[in-house]
Image (cartoon, rainbow over all chains, first blue to last red; front, side, top):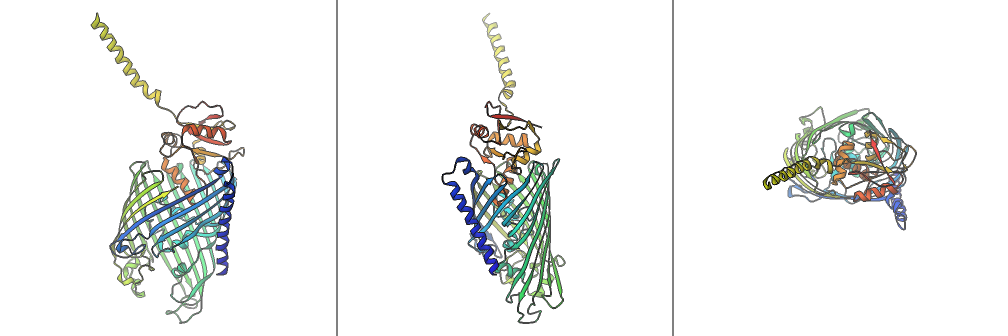
Length: 404
Length: 148
């Protein structure tokens, strides 16, 4: 715990250092140096209304608890070295912790940078290279919709998957019209009470220790991004530390947790039409937690198909079908009844239509309607009484955002 | 006599008008030009190399000079025609890759200039500078590069 506290302290002082160096650079710096130091930021405010079930706050009464504010700085003292940091304030009902968080703070060093081949390293608090949208999921302008497809980017586990304190080795290689980008990550995930509650299968007092995070992503791009194909593998393992109070099944024992996720991503761009699809398998294994020598594995499956159409440089419309099964061997949710949850927790099928309007280079207005069957992606923390959930529900959202 | 003159004048006006209509697009349509700082030793660049430069993946020229990329605002006609005709990309595709870099901290966006005049001035004064204009340029410290 202390180590974790120390590493977050280090990350904060590191980013303060960057800000301070930046401030020094900008006082009395020449025009050229000023261009090496750059600010950026974004803010967005959304409204969510649901006819049943809460999503980002008390949404059945219309929730405004849906905002992001980010402020970042980058400093490039020489062409192969880049320092960058970003602070984020986020409010998403009870789903995310409120308050200001260090989003990233890292040093990037590119040691080979040829026209056709390059390699480099990033270290610090980094955004995890995960599928197509994870790194920029908070920036409205880079998202295809207000809410990302929950099959691949579930809001309930956002904090855990989004960023980590890691070292990333990256590279690119271009061959003819193809470019391949590879990222390899090793480090520590951000673990707090919220992610412990999500990963530990009991309300018993327990914590995670000896955790490791490892990931690889490669993205193949053809013809300047006309076709993009991505493969992601990410693995997290840890020990569950607890003093058993009751024997299983009422309580849990100390044991191992192993989580691995594989994602296949696909995108094709025509002049105006864009087809995107991603497919995920996420396997969670508990070793010895439910009894000495007992191994229990559950595999989540999720996928979506999305078709976007750009009417012009300002307007875009899209439609999406997004499916999640927390246990791919139980797509009807029958086994949910055994743990006192409704069948609808076993699946989620979301049909979404929406629009985005870029009314200036910096401003974006987006709106969408979701018709959802199932409650697999409805956060427990906002809906603790699962038996009050409704299987068929609608979600309406509207968001205004600005970036610079 | 007068009516004949009138008729000839009318024909002449008609011919001039038709000529103007056909020539006008050629007179005013401009081809976007790729420009680099005069010290740059490259003779020509391929479209794929230009995409790597304008998507901000490449930071150095082969001789080691840092690359400084200058762009006009997304909605500027010269930016649109350069993106579409030279890079074969849409302005929104370029913007998306720059946003990805900036907001995840792994890179920077090009430096945005307000006008074509500023563009030429920047490329002329910054070593390793690269940019574009909507049409022909006449500036000593800037070279126009051929795109393969």
